[in-house]
Length: 184
Image (cartoon, rainbow, N blue to C red; front, side, top):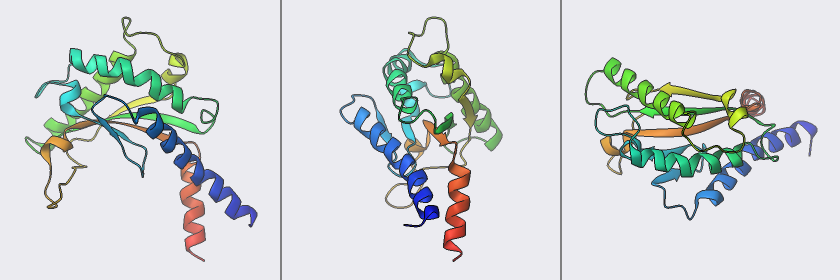
């Protein structure tokens, strides 16, 4: 195997190993979530964390965060992966009711509320909390990335969600190398 091919395999394999570890960690979980096997994004329906039209984390949402965050961060910042993860993103998504800007505000407020909850004084301590401060960000996506049902129609319930994503330090390099290889 050429050195370039070996580097590509190592870098793309890292994301796969992280996704596998996350899937294993949460496979028997009672949390209302799913792990995207392609991207590694973890999706919670909006109803888990928020009431309709609200950006305040509910009591049920806080309980989910208290169970989820320590395990999620333990996987991403474990010895195996911490040198490869550059960013952890909390994304808010909405349905298509209301204007784009209204939903952008709502989705941003929701994602920021989740991050604020994690760092609130009364949130239980967890390993890597200090490291997380330099890596976590929150983004609102409004209704720009809806989820479709089997009839290729927007599924409003599934579109209203909070996602936890991670970005690898080498993702841009991976894309560049893959583009080079596919240009052969």
